[in-house]
Image 1 (cartoon, rainbow, N blue to C red):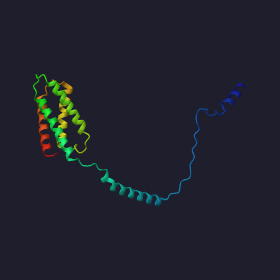
Image 2 (image 1 turned 180 degrees about the vertical axis):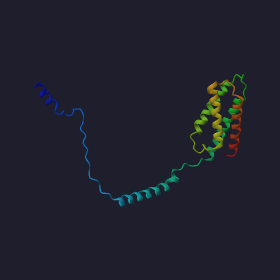
Image 3 (image 1 turned 90 degrees about the vertical axis):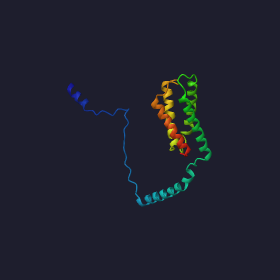
Image 4 (image 1 turned 30 degrees about the vertical axis):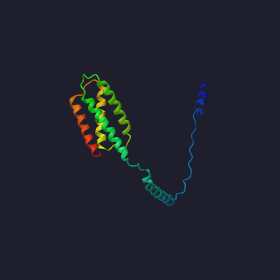
Amino acid sequence: MASASATATLLKPNPPPPHKPIITASVSPPLPRHHNLHRRDFLSLTATSTLLITQSIPFLAPAPASAAEDEEYVKDTSEVISKVRTTLSMERTDPNVADAVAELREASNSWVAKYRKEKALLGKASFRDIYSALNAVSGHYVSFGPTAPIPAKRKARILEEMETAEKALSRGR
């Protein structure tokens, strides 16, 4: 009899554990489709929004840079160029090299901070050349210190970029 009671307990179904949620799914009937109505609404909305956007573009476009802003850019850029040339021409043994490098880094940082965000200047040749030269000069002094001489090849490239930037500035580029 012991074996008969054992088989009876084996056949009992186990209830699902209480901590597991039971997931049920329901299917709703499909909604009626009106392709022509939605397509017509979509096309009319698209046409209207396109018309509104094209009419408002002149109001959203940034105003062109004024002559005063151009003059300020030319003046600031010329000052930075002269500081770079003055600093690069100093002798290594000059006691004022560290101060000149500190002034140059301050001037170049303020120039970059002021003009990097101007979208109108990003395509100018003068901006590109000055930015590249300032990056090379600042990178050298950050890496090697304010009294380390700039290698001849790097110095020649920086001075060449300054010269092309001055030419571009004189041509309004």
